Length: 284
Image (cartoon, one colour):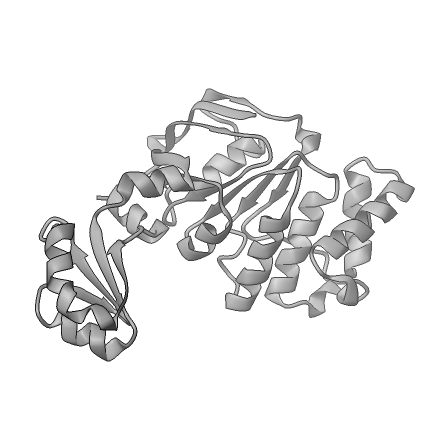
């Protein structure tokens, strides 16, 4: 288990991170969520010991068991992926034989087999990001820290990287992100950070339950039916979905209003909040 207690970082009079505490259970994936400038990178920098904390304590694996991908990874563009990973592996303390086996394994994990002998200078942004994950995994870390691993990628690149994170086994993962939709697909736990402080944390399901019940949702078979229904009352239309405030209508009232339209309705009930909904609520 990873434990962080009252982690704080001051830069002169500026408080970048203040009294941050959390735990990471073994082999879980946790999203560190917050807007740019919230303190995500500072937290990861302190956990990797690239930045010294002003105060607080951390219970972490030894540095040799931690893998790290910075937000803006740098590569030797004249090398190919195999050469680069061999170099990183040996710098991590692996023998040449171990480095060969480890490089082959992580190249397969990040799906770069076809391009492993191409020079890195010819790689796309998504390929470089996958290579960055490969170098962070080369020494089989027990803790993997990723700083905004998908922020600079197109939708296909984001999907590829998030799939890699989702499929990792026997590794505890903490990744910083402000792209909430992607995080929602692969995370076990969430840490919401704003202005250097943890505002909310817990398992994804616990947090959704806590912030659920804010809206009622009616899902129609067609957009036209949804718009006709929504015209009767204060509501919001999102495609085939009509959203209503739970403070204005009870479920009993909604059932009565929806009854004449039952043949056009696919589903009716409480709307499960997205991470974006929760973050907006937390930030109020």
